Length: 136
Image 1 (tube, rainbow, N blue to C red):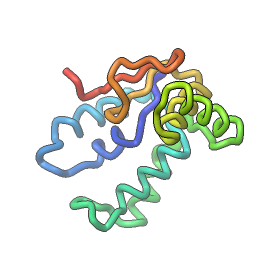
Image 2: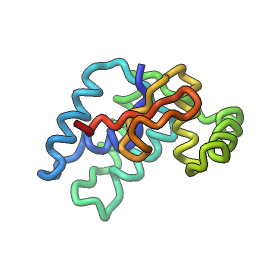
Image 3: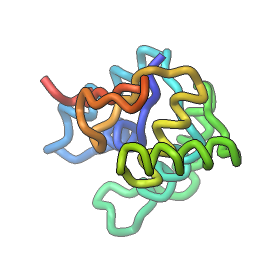
Image 4: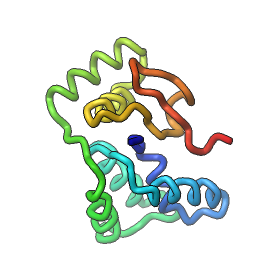
């Protein structure tokens, strides 16, 4: 089961003409139904989707419904254990804490793949590999 990063979810709701192909791929990932998320990803989705400077921003009430609709997928909670693991991963791989938290949330749900545009495609982080679903 792949873990989905925030950028994939943002593309899934994008109405920007130049992001149409990415939106289709992102929705195909979600339509497959066998994905995992984290509280962090859902928080980031809410913040970015409702950001007033976003050309296709959605309203607070729409964002709430969107986040609630995504709760059908397994969601990793933010715990102290996850936080400490992310700190260690940040140090080990020299990545941002937030990216490390994504990796560790995926690991906590036993996902060996993270679908993301933000981390290096095909990079392995101690058994969790990043795949950019928009490549190729």
